[in-house]
Length: 432
Image (tube, rainbow, N blue to C red; front, side, top):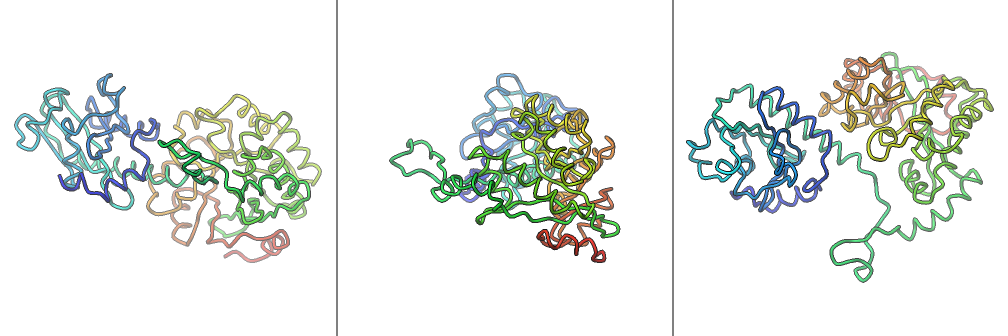
């Protein structure tokens, strides 16, 4: 079992922060799908460390095991998948020399088992995706292939999960200030200074606004721009995070919208601006947005407010957020679900959301995530939602997304962020 205890593999597993993680619908959806498609009573996605296996997701497991979500390695078939870095197919564990003495057979009724490696992007096998039967079963090559495809989707979901983790503007407190068992996040002193100066910078108009071109994939024509803010070396996402920490995100968001409307109003072009959950819950937000548009002669239909899915779905979602979105749509503003395709929103939830379009996560432009992109765009098309692709880096990304039905997008392939004075020139320039 040398591969199970390999320090590099265990380090990669620890760095993934998946062990003991809360259950996620992204993974649960895959195990439910495995159970249905293979017609088995139980499917499990396991993570194997040096002394136990943890159930990242399970469908159909005994209630007591579903509650504890782990077993010692004495009850693990998946450890052999990790050790072999290859599928393990067991027709009848009682007659299989490799697992005949495994306590899972005696204690958990694991008789037939089919498991495939669950890998990280770097190649380390951190666990297994498996199907289990309490009776003997002959597994087919198609069964193994199906589990392998689902495991590949799980790997994509893990990669996207890591990629969408928010940057943290923190460092560990000195040991004397932190409990021995954990580090305490504290705001970096430089950022404390910036946070204190941020309200004045907003009031004085010192925030820099740049624009990302939004392009029709077929023609290359620029139809609009996404506004991005920056200040004192902080990019757009960092600045929003700092504004949240300092409690001035509503003022920052409204300043960005006003500046963007001023810059783009003369050009009769589309505009995409981020809207945070805090803004949506702010009383009168929708009316202030429409008033800002009117002040610059922009029709509400020209604006797309990009809303993070966490404002509308999940533990952080509140009625006030959804009410704010519905108010915006009633006033003619389009609302887009930002970061779509990262797996947190189910199809039924997507169908119920008060949105007009989806803005695909930038990772989905990559060939490695083509299946996820296809599923996301297919869902959008089925629900009559528009879609904007992100992260487009080359002609291959353009062709791939266009073939999947995406009409418009943005990314480095269409040029760098531009200043307000270059907007007009961009609109006059010929397509790429």
